[in-house]
Length: 301
Length: 282
Image (tube, rainbow over all chains, first blue to last red; front, side, top):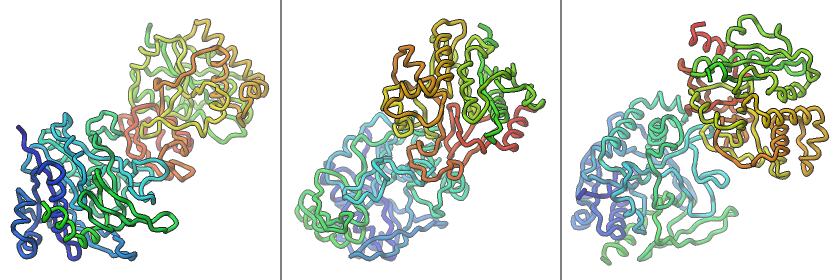
């Protein structure tokens, strides 16, 4: 029987505590995916944070494996905006070791999720024992009414107008096969030659984003075309749903969360999230509700 | 049938009202065919053979002139395409638009097309190989229930009575286009004459089945049908366009596997023509 598990990449920066996010992600994964094994890739700095701030019991419960891997020396950093109480904060983001997931995972079958990916359903279980080597999402949809993603009715988003479609490295599945290894080697090649690929694909981002490198790799592997060959499949668990930076976390429930969002006319409304998985952009809010998550999903266990 | 019995036919009818050098476009198309195709016969129809520069002549099997044509001005030259059946030197012909380029070898299409007497394109693709949503640009066709033919890639056999009748009807429609367009596009009449509309009306009159199919097809580069809502008026302002030494075409970094109807004539530069010539050791 092949080993299966969730892999998280967790690197604290000067403002955001990815350690707490990964705890939340893990306890939700274990609750909804039948106690799935969870491993974490992190650095010494974040490990120290765990040692000094998180109870040993909780860490041992959450993580079946802790893999220490420092970020690359030539780290490219990118900034992104987060809305917190209606004003933005510029945050430096450390791009982790996601491109090395193939070589770091201890599992035969791995689902990599972002630390801000909240699992409130068992749908990811549908990926285990897949006949495909890799599943990566290429369709995303915001849960709230403001469509900050695709224009019109299209749910597939272009990396940039006139270029390739975006592949979302937020959550993806792979088996340890020769093909998967080739794919990740290609991702690494693209990263190492990003100045070239950024130019060829007319991608304005000088910093290296996993979404972009995964997108370019998928495009190349599909013979510089769309996924006609069906080599890398999308998700059969449904499209990737996201709470955007306009959505705030209002409350944490026993079986989901409540979001506070805005209409196009800036009117507040509330949205209950249950029985679905969600990419939650607003990391500050996630951390603010850390104790609430523990209260609902850890202390109550 | 020998390979010479199969070939591509392209109309390159320059006129004074239009600055486009269709003969140069046809020459570049022919070069791309010579570079990429196994079956690479191509002939061109022009107003006058003297319009064709000497250095272009080698690439064409035949240069067919229609000196006596009355359709020489504005959009009228397109009406001469109704004579494709009479003018083609091939037993099996694929009629193309002059503003097209070939990227991959599609010679195996001939075997499949051979099973039919006439086969026109009904679905075209974006540069990403997605089928286009053409209801906006083909509104008249849908509104009037007219078959939606794209004349940019049309296969037909000679010495076939049905095909001959089709083109005879085409000639009539070309001759009396105002009448036929108003009759068949009664709910909304196309603003200009087009071979697409004429072929579609003729197909309707012939009673041929009207259904969409993905073969044959080609990439159509009209900007506002690319599905990603390109907001620029020219796709070449937004997308990269490259050709490698094997003649493979890359648009927006997508490798093109189908013939490309590039639509914007000015991408055919002298440099591109010279590039194709160098690849062919001309």
